[in-house]
Image 1 (cartoon, rainbow over the protein chains, first blue to last red):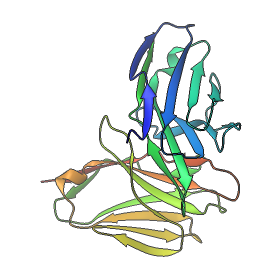
Image 2: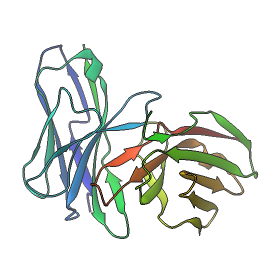
Image 3: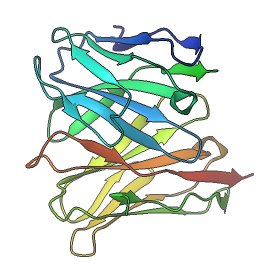
Image 4: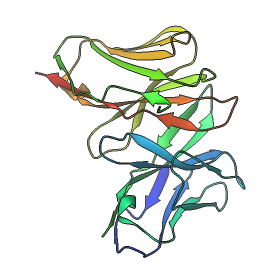
Amino acid sequence: NAGVTQTPKFQVLKTGQSMTLQCAQDMNHNSMYWYRQDPGMGLRLIYYSASEGTTDKGEVPNGYNVSRLNKREFSLRLESAAPSQTSVYFCASSEFSGANVLTFGAGSRLTVL
Amino acid sequence: QKEVEQNSGPLSVPEGAIASLNCTYSDRGSQSFFWYRQYSGKSPELIMFIYSNGDKEDGRFTAQLNKASQYVSLLIRDSQPSDSATYLCAVNNENRDDKIIFGKGTRLHILP
């Protein structure tokens, strides 16, 4: 029972390089989310997807793109990485059951030099 | 103004005492309110959620919601050193969208 799986766990990039963070969930959840976490900033929503085929911007979408490939997978792409995107990224999924309770992945630590 | 506000702390509480964590939110249409706990270097995990005015209790944890004052709190009774963590408040307005917005979190330190 894997829950939410994120890859990679660690990545170092140079400014201007591109990369994709992968996220997959095996709980048959409809909604999926990408957050970033910086020291003292809590979790900030980048993008979310309420269902397969839909995506919406969150609080800090600039510099990112997402793809909801199917119900299980939601990827986050950095087209041209910048040092300001150095952060820990969390993927999460939810299924409404009284409330949208989030299940988080283990996180991906990204450093942009 | 951020949608969800929390005092960043650190909040230091003696072992065995009650820890009180507070959160205010700006969207009056918000319907669901969550408390997550995050240990250093780990993912957030749900403690509890609340969507009706009043109190909701789960073991040593009590969530309190006051929609008129746009205020939600978490009480931890009989605080233990293992409760030392960052506590994140989150809010969702399901009528508007599925966005779940977090506060910056409050660092709690239980003093042995």
